Image 1 (spheres, one colour):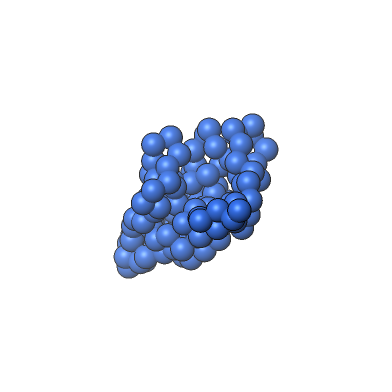
Image 2 (spheres, rainbow, N blue to C red; image 1 turned 90 degrees about the vertical axis):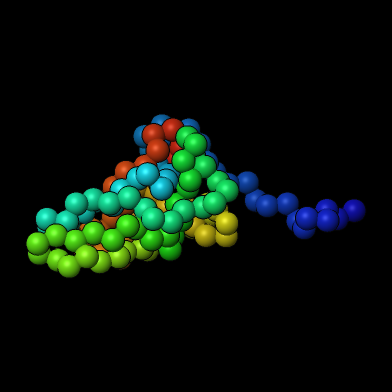
Length: 116
């Protein structure tokens, strides 16, 4: 008999971090920053999935705007995610994922959870 919730979801490969796979990023983690613009945290995240008690971030989540004497305040989004691990239907953000401004990448993540 089929489950009323639909077919079972494939098991994601989420493991304790052994230093070999990228760390999962959360709302408190930051981009790398650029020029005189400081690194900044995410402004959006999952409403129901946490790592170490902090909301998980996903591809498409936005960062708090930042600016500096060189650049006016500007927004950015996480432009990449780990395609085989999703939260709320979106790929999970991770250390090294792209950012849509010159910051370049997500710079920090949780030390206890990696994706791979």
